[in-house]
Length: 252
Image 1 (tube, rainbow, N blue to C red):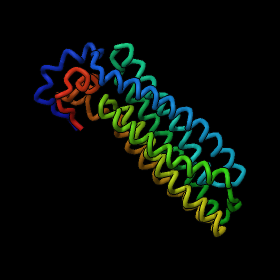
Image 2 (tube, one colour):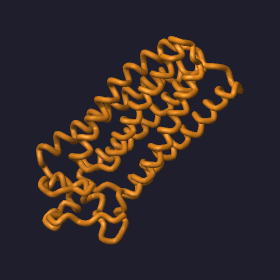
Image 3 (cartoon, rainbow, N blue to C red):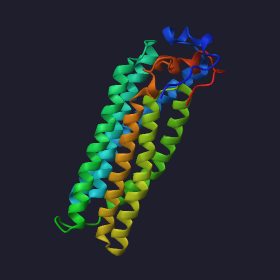
Image 4 (spheres, helix red, strand yellow):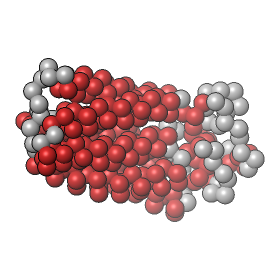
């Protein structure tokens, strides 16, 4: 859909060409975004490795899906690093490139949803071996609940201040990882405490459903809020308005 231009935007138009304003708040937000993105990459590389290995050894589709989501989280963070590098250099972001990157993230979510659904269904129908218990995976997922909730909240705050589509999508993925952590934790705990192996497969199906939902939303975010429509607000202006005109309301 088309986004109307804010009434005060006329005074902010020069920013669509410079985007290098020196507002101290914006500089602080950019530094924070760099730090959060670096932390996201480091944590998710560790998380993906541990989850995939422990999930493979235990035959847990919930853990494997969780690890795959962590791998996508890394790719999303790399997109944000690309966007931030353009902002730091003062160059205008390539809106088409950002849109393609966000949609690529969406496709990876769809791929995860399809794979996890197939594997979980196979286990529930007895076509594959039942998953074993995983103490390492249980501890990892419990820790992830704390890490992801803090990262998601901070990223949403920074994304609102910088007006970045990519950073908003990245924050949404981090929030998805939090939900996944809670769901996978329930499945793993049920298998651990009561030997309910099928709870792991059910948790995997929930993982697939959330991955599909987030993939759909990321694909829609790839439209960059409909900025290609006539009279719509340009993506570069969305990025610049908070920096040059802090009092100018930014459309949602």
